[in-house]
Image (cartoon, rainbow over all chains, first blue to last red; front, top):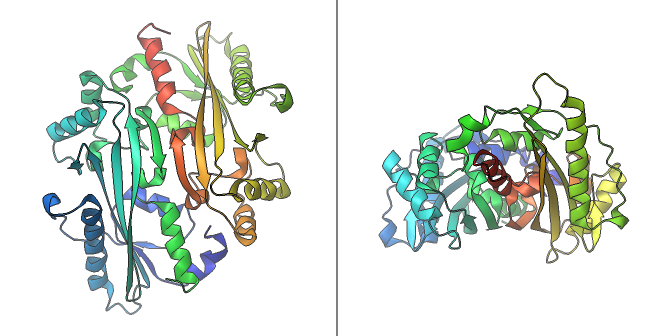
Length: 208
Length: 208
């Protein structure tokens, strides 16, 4: 979708305000040129005080604002800053990145206990173009297989769940127990490419 | 799902009978050891004489049988051979890999013309374990955005559509115009990991 516009987009200074390798790989697949500048924004919003959508959008905005503050006095200001935050919800609860092995086991046990009940992956995306901000949340439904305690433990022991919202990497070993998704698959990896591309297209076509 | 079994699986000689880099990458994400041996099977079945499912399963079987014939007299016979074939259907028609730029343009134009009408990706999988064969077809529904003729032409000019069933790479630039899928996302890339993992598990648990 962006192919006819890539040369125009590449005249702009584009920043991905994220340290996620997965997000960088997804954005790179479009052949855009961009710089990776992870934010120092402290991700400490209280889940109880926000809807799921507000939570991820505010966190993504925090990342974008942090990177903007650090780069706005550069000789060449950033034109576009892209920020995103992903988390998983199940049964009304929010699951972020597990911090310990025990948390990872609990998370995967919850998410794979009832194969017919899906979890929902929320990614909030914020795009800053010059002084304007657009944001949206994309939600993807994920149905996982039921796993045995041995399978969960062995999966956690691989280390893959650490640093991943909901404790699973759909592009990694978890691909074997994600039975079905409904929605944008890249959203589960961390960046909903279809809607993000539409925003980038609006910027180039002066419809942002 | 396979993590507790990986060491047992790695005692076996596992062959992926496919030249697809995407399939190899997916299988590699499980941390299994396997060899890649592309088949020489001529993919020339007549689409008119087969259901979609029969077509991809027979092609996958042809690939597995070809590789088995070539390797069966090895000092160490293959224990497991995995074959797969993927194609896209839309409006009752089958779309394989485009052979020319014109075919690629026609294919993408067809698939993106009516965003509310999805295409269906069929992957037939055949697993041979010793002298036994199992096969299945996994189907994933894909909803694409409407593209302009300029966008289609620019996408085809990148070369990505060539060599891909249905003329699009969901892991590549086409991620920006795949709005939604329903089913196993890896199936669209070429290997339905969830059901394949269940078959490999059955082999180790002697339930094949």
